[in-house]
Length: 310
Image (cartoon, rainbow, N blue to C red; front, side, top):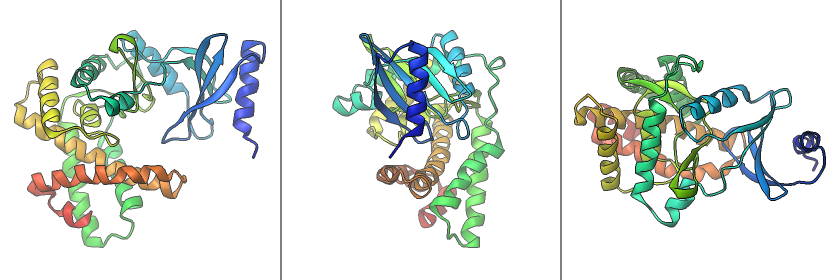
């Protein structure tokens, strides 16, 4: 079967390099319509992003990559762009993801490094970056994915109960310090570079939102579970390094509720990826995400109804 997008990408690269002296191999897909290819040429390596313009907009990626780099965050450099066709040529940050490294050998120092980078990201100024707010409309629209895709046959009573829960979670997110939020800051989107430096990718959906969101993404990762004691130690590390002003017990609840909002959304997204997009591999990650959600339903009485609903 002909891959028309790959043919177009190849033609674009031939024009950019002014020859055909390169090799294209698949680097990765992700949970969107984007695809990534590794381009090898003359002992150099690049990443090409294929983002169909009718489905994906490359402009935020370019704008935010420059903003992050200006703040001393290692985002991939933009080498060339074709927004009309939806192609970007990027710096290659290698193939050692944070996830692969932790699966081979869990290292808490890597997580502390990731938290240090996160604190740097949260300190970035945001007024010049044209970043949308993670407002109640967006927070609730995301949680609605749980109903639309994961629980499509809900009773009216359960639907009403979930709306009450959604309001609690949205209010929690909006009551915390509002900062630059990567929005997918987890082990698959961090690259382990030389000397344990971290590269950051997949930041195009950034928003201004809770200072607990990216931390919950990292420590309650949908793809990799860390032990409770490790999570507590890292939560305390962030609390100290970021100089959080609220009480640690209150901050931990903010963190837990922000994680719950994210996990309810992810349950809907993973089911949608299977049903709508044929990406059935994400079904394998649902049990861990559901486990996180049920832990919070057991911990906080105001969310106990989630045990029955889920």
